[in-house]
Amino acid sequence: MQLIIFDKDGTLYCGKELCERWTSGVLDGVRRVAPDIEQELETYLKKNVHQQTWSALQKRVEYELIMRGVDVDVASWMPKPLPQRLYPNVQTTLQALPCATALLTADSRRNTEYLLRRDNLYFDAVVCGDDFPGKPDPCGAWHILKTLGIAPEETVIVGDTEVDMQLKVTAGLGMSVGMTTLQKTLPGADIMINSVQELV
Image 1 (cartoon, rainbow, N blue to C red):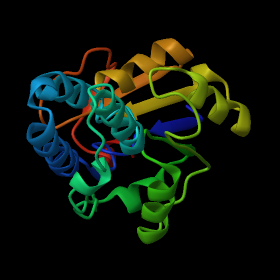
Image 2 (cartoon, one colour):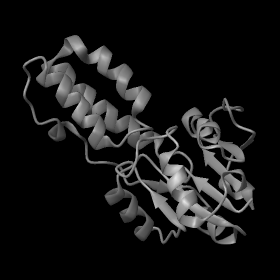
Image 3 (tube, rainbow, N blue to C red):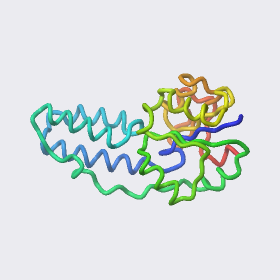
Image 4 (cartoon, rainbow, N blue to C red):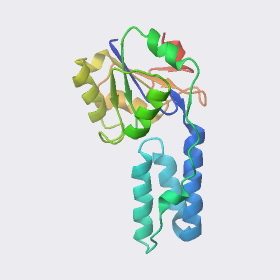
């Protein structure tokens, strides 16, 4: 393989606690002003919180509220995010890999670039949620492949969700690697690992 494309949250960064706190803050606000749609939005947010940027999710919440005559500043409900914590050994693993690496994330470019600078992480290509449609849409992966001049079949996707694994099929990639400590299998994964360190 010539290229490994990594997901960010849940794969390189521990994103679970961050997403749960963000979702909880939004739903608390919805409960106060429009309790009749809390369940609908809870289902939507839990399904999409790992796939779309927070700004896109916020716009959807605002739209649903405005359609019901509620005009509020949804951003004021957002708790200050917890610092995103890099999983152990990510930096040394990325440096030791004998191939190109790329990052494909639903997070915003602003936050992603901040984290990469803060944690001194380097990728040959980075695609964010505000660049292309979210996974499993193949456009972000294809952009990476075109930028780096690497064939899809020579590429591995590493991620922690079923949507990440679906990218293997939609973009025609060579292999999908599921990374999770929460379950033993991930639908669509060719192999499973518990840490990116296992890639070396």
